[in-house]
Image (cartoon, rainbow, N blue to C red; front, side, top):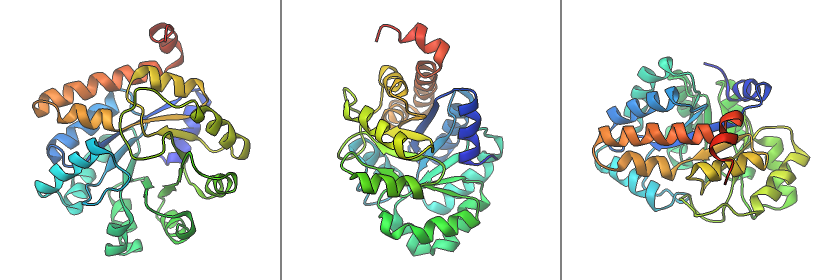
Length: 275
């Protein structure tokens, strides 16, 4: 499977903004997670971010926290998540980005953890509680396994810190659109437009915007502001948790199609032109 960087370059050559859905592994169960990955891949996802359920998800809002709690209560373990990914990833076009907190990595050992996720085909890693000052060892070791570590820029980041994160981040730069945790918002703050411009002035790496995006018109707005990728989490997690697993998968398929249409240039002009 292609690397995160290479896949972004391919999309850039086609002048395409990427769609990155997020779902939580094991909610409602790993069989549904596997099918959701296939559905997202078939319906416009350019990358897929998969959250590993964790008991203390500080960066996550109530929707994703609840999904993680349900997955843990059903006994979801990292080993099972990786086993599922090993079976599913060979059939996917979209590279998988694993979202996990730092404690599970330290518990297993950095090299051991990276070897395991690389072995099943994971290509990117987001660790929201990893400070920039402590990221070097993980970044360097991950590179030896062909895994790119994506770092986050917050709205409160200083200019010096933005530049430092831009230099270190691999694959793309994850721009957090709000101050606080993940979750759906009624509108995207205008400050995001300025942050994209600031980042663009210091790096040519792709910029993905996440936290707070849930609707096609919001995805379109972020694309118009110059983002290279739109990351949507809570909206997908909520859809997948609604009703039966079959109903959840149908809702995820529909949302993925709508979001992709909103950030596809020719289609978006027709579908979201009045937004």
